[in-house]
Length: 247
View: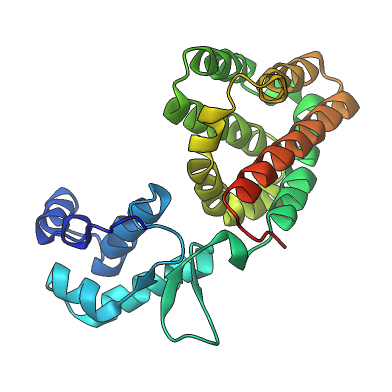
C-alpha cells in the first residue's frame, strides 16, 4: 500500500506560502486547495481515511476550516462518507459508477459537440485544432502527463464553446471526478499505449474537430459519443486490471 507523506502534504510552510501569495484567501479554501491537489495527484490514494484532527494538528490550525474543506470536497465527489464507518474517505472506484460518469459525459459532450458544429463561427477553431495536434504529439512522444492535461483541455473547450450555460454548469460538477479518473488511469494508458484500440481513441479527436470545423452537427455528436464509448471501455479495462468493482 502506498505510504502517505502526511507531514509533506500538510506542511505548515505550504500553508504560510499560500497565505503570503493571497492574504485575503479564506483558511478553509487554502486547506481545500491543498487537499484537492493531493487527491488529484494521487499523493493520498483512494480509500484513505482523512482525520480532521490529524490534518489540523499538522497545519497548526483549528478543526473548523479542515471540516469545511472536507465538506466542500465531499460535495465535489472527491471525498465520501460511509454509513458503516465514521469519517471521511478519499473517493474510490467502488464508491461510484464508471458507467454513470460516462453516460453523463456522453449526454453533455455529445450535445456540446452538436451545438459547437451548429455555431462553429463562435468557436475558437484554431485553439481546438492546436489541442488536437498537441494530443497527437504528446501521445507519439509518450508524454502521458501532458497528454492527460491536453485531453481534458480539448473536451473542456468544446463544453465551454457550446453556448449553453446549463451544460457548462453540469459539466463543471463532474469535472474533478473526471480529472481524478484520468490521473489514476495514466499508468494503464502508458502500458497500453501501443494498442491499436488506444491509437484509435487518440485519432478520434481529429474526427470531432473536423466535424465541428465543417459545421456538421450530427457528425460531431456521433464522433464525440463514439469517442466516449471507446474511452469507457479503456477505463473499464483499467479498473478490471486493478481489481476494482465497478457497478
